[in-house]
Image 1 (cartoon, rainbow, N blue to C red):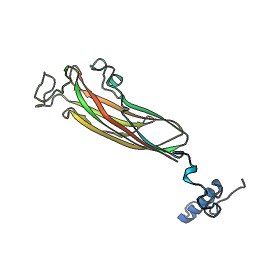
Image 2 (tube, rainbow, N blue to C red; image 1 turned 90 degrees about the vertical axis):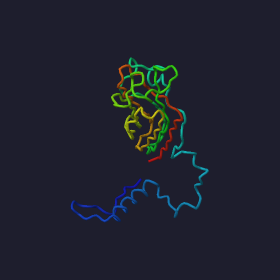
Image 3 (tube, one colour; image 1 turned 180 degrees about the horizontal axis):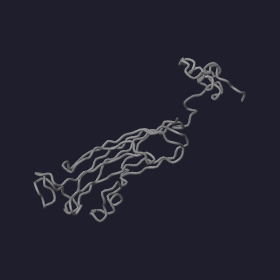
Image 4 (cartoon, rainbow, N blue to C red; image 1 turned 60 degrees about the vertical axis):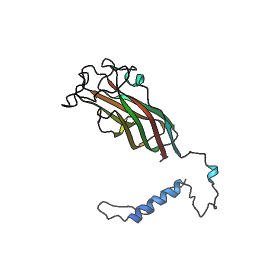
Amino acid sequence: MAQKFVPYTFRVSEVIEPTRVNENARTLANEFNGNLDRENLREEAIASSMIVDQSCNLVGHRKNVSRTTEQIFGGASPTGSVRQMAFRTFMSEDFQLKHDAMLICSYSFRFTWVDAADASGDYEGTTAGNDGEVDLTTNTDRHSVIFTLRVNGIEVDRSANHTFFRKDDSIFLSGAQPVSAGTVNIDCQVKIVDHTTDHEFYIAQTDDVLNFKFKKR
């Protein structure tokens, strides 16, 4: 390839015209793309049928990818001995990319508060001081949950604190992040803050969907 020089150079404190910047960029762009344009490439020379499906973009969704209660908390009915007030992996999915891309993703699901001390799994807290666990009149005991959506360990979205006052709740997290070719990980983290003495509250989730779009850069 022959040497190529941009038509305009700029000096410090010089007022730069945008059109000249664009012309410099077009000079190099034409060199990189082999000067292929409408003038030297016949109409419909490259048809969509010739391009491998999703060779430039990866778009899709995955359902029911959240982890089970045992995987998240360490037991079907977790107690304070196995669940601490720290972030745990709620969902984790890996993707293999051939190109650098911009990732746009969202993760939605429903969850339900569960009381491990109740064999029926019924939710406590409908009356003041129920079983000595929750006092709704004075609000002395609080249980809340927070979720974060991450791409390669970088947080792209975080939910508000969702308290136990709503038995059933829904979450929608979304974000965008540039990613490099190779393995890309999307994961959701969960942290429960349970101020009861025996830590018997946890969550069960349903109807989770991970939507993703990798757009080649």
